[in-house]
Image (cartoon, rainbow, N blue to C red; front, side, top):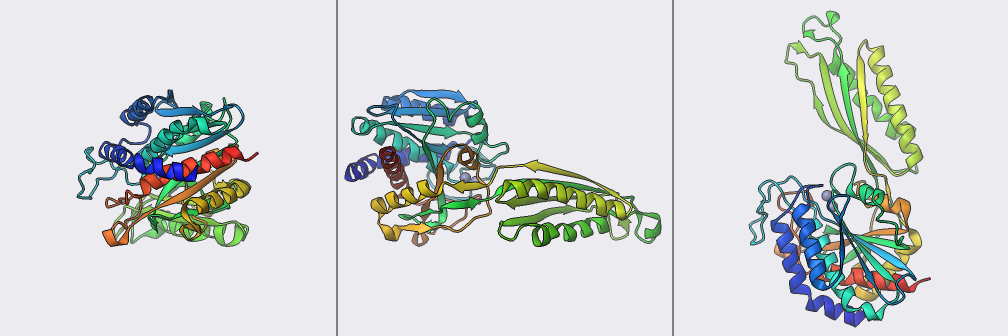
Length: 395
Ligand SMILES: [Zn+2]
Ligand SMILES: [Zn+2]
């Protein structure tokens, strides 16, 4: 079976790459993946399968049934959205949509999963159970396409026994993949603070309430959440990347705006931290004579890979690629909406190496020069097939 999958992945390689290039040239922003969804559905029909369209508006789901299809189901997920970035790469498949770019590799995930669909369809007489392919919208934008797909029933009829998602990794050389059991990625919450004081002449602070000084105290004090309040065993990050105090050398402004991000890996602590931050900020602002509006926009939950499923997946990957090409990943404080699936079903999110230093393919995701070594595409398609078919065999 392994050789058969590798040979089919090889055989379909050009088609998988051409699909990726088409998607890369026609990127669409989160929750606007209309043409992308149509492209996915048309390709699925062309293979001979039946897509379910319109799930969470632009999501597409495909059920590939083997023999005894109700015995077990494994789900495989790809995200389809692009980012508001202008592509700076000079490549024949450069984005044709000005200001929109597949800079997070979701074109790779989608075309790779389309390749997996074709391989699985060709092998449908040779496996037992079903594989559910999930093409979801809006990974890059709150509330996350994954949460909407779940709301619309993607994890029912049939409910998957296990689920895999793969993501490109520009820090891992092409030909290699990475796994991590247990805690892997962080919950992400956006913080918006409006500090209110009373502006006036900088020479007469006694008549004003300085929101700049209050903001400075808040930024310093709120770090206590991480250093003194967070349980030491739980990873936790608080960063403020935007502070606007738009006065002048001699003008104290009325208000200061602060924006930041709070990330952690435990839902109980996350809730507690939210309350503590608000209480602390309001108390400090009030003690200094001002006030503050503290808004937290909740993002994705933290991502925990199911330990046994991930251990098995890593071993399947070793069979497929060799032990030297399967790496262990570190905890990463970025967020990913695949986390929603991990809350509902046994799931594993792993990374697919796309780096090629010799060819200068080294840019990070979410940058205008991001690109991938396309040799990762047939590998991603074949490996996902291999993971799914092995997992279907476990009881
Ligand atoms: Zn991204
Ligand atoms: Zn991404």
